[in-house]
Structures are given as structure tokens and as C-alpha cells.
Length: 276
Image (cartoon, rainbow, N blue to C red; front, side, top):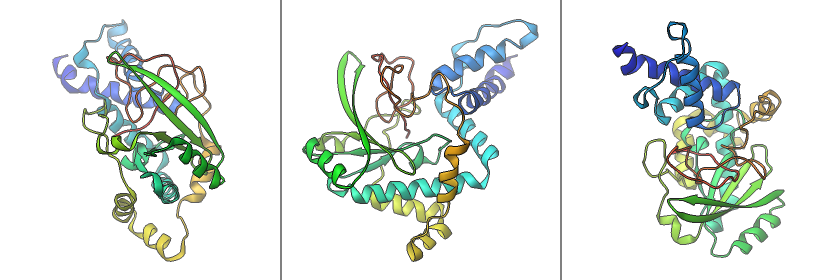
């Protein structure tokens, strides 16, 4: 059992947690790993066993299993959809240039799955100016104020949920916060924020042929797959919205750009996504 404890069991729990997130709509890493541990250990010698903290995979291990699961399930269509989502992000960031937009989350890391949205941080000196700008662009949006309790401190964030071919979520920060970054609970590192130039370089590196075609013709490879993805999306699950900032009255949320952390204490409000 010691060898299994040291690696094999963690890998099995990570794989089951990834399956739960993809197929059963569980949208928090911590919830998924606990459910997965109960299911896996319930199969040991025909009786339910208790898991130790060391048995549980890290959020990063689950993320890698989630990416592998998505790649096996979706094949090359996922890569095309990722490129299309990155172009949606790029064009949105160009439209929001006065507010120093930065891309975070699954579209930047490549860890997208069905239902992923485009997460952008924006840094307006005047939030009303941002709202006027978004209205002038003709974008359809909902504005939401989210209150989070973290480390004994109450913090408020304003989100703009924009309807697009891939949903956009704009999280509003003060301009001074452009120089600071929240840390991801997945690996403890500062969250990566990509500007227009960095995102363009990423597209050129990860999708060279599709990027050249986009520059030459304006055509976006994978846009059709992105449009079709909504038709194939899984049915809503009981935890829907935790990773994508769901509707009013939803479960607890992580700070924008973070994943679930069992040591964090949050008000029962909607929210998330994104990633390092």
C-alpha cells in the first residue's frame, strides 16, 4: 500500500477528480478531490477507507489530469477552439486598450474545457468610464459586485459579464493593482497576466499556422468549433458557476483568478476562473 500511497493512489484520485469536473459538473478542485477520494477508497478491499491528507493530489495534479482528459476526449478540436478563444480575447483587449486589459485563466494557460470563458482584468481610473466605454462598444453585459472575505479582510470586486461568441468576464481593479498580482492557490505563484503583445506572441508560438492565416486574411481557425461547443456543452450541474462566476445566490467563490483553497473563508457569493 505504501507504493500506492506515494503515487499511484494520488494519480487515481486526480484522474477521478478530473472526470467528475468534466462529466458531472463539479467545479471546485477541493470538492472534486474529496469526492474522488471517497469513491476510490470506497473500492479498496470492499470497504470504505479513510484518506490521509498526503493521499490527496494537489490542484496542479488535478489540472494536469483535467487537461489530459480534455485532450483525449476532444482531440484537435480543442486546440482549434483554444485558438479561437485566444483571438476573441485579443480582439476584446484591443477594444479595451484604455484600461490596460490583461488576460488570465484557462485561455492563457491552455487549460480550457467546455464552458470556459475569457477572463480579463481591467484597470480603469474611473469605473464609470469603463462602463460607458463598454456600452459604446455595443456589448451586451451584466454588472455584478462580489464581496469576498479573505484572511479577515472584506474585499469587493466588480465584474462585467459580457455576452460574446465566448463569454467574457471583466474583473475591475484599481490602476495601482496592475503592478501587483494575486497568487494562485494551485501552485502559490503569482497569477500570470498577459497583455496584447504577450498574447500575440503566445498565439504565434502555440498556433503558428492559424496565427499566420489570421494575420493575412482575418479568418479565425476554430471559430466554427467554438460556436458548436455550446451545443455540445454538458448539462448544468449543481456546482455550475463556481469557476465561471455564476448567478446570484451561488456557492462560495474564490478571489478572481484563484482556484478553490480549503483554508480560505469566503462569503456565500457566486464566482470564479481562472488560473495561473
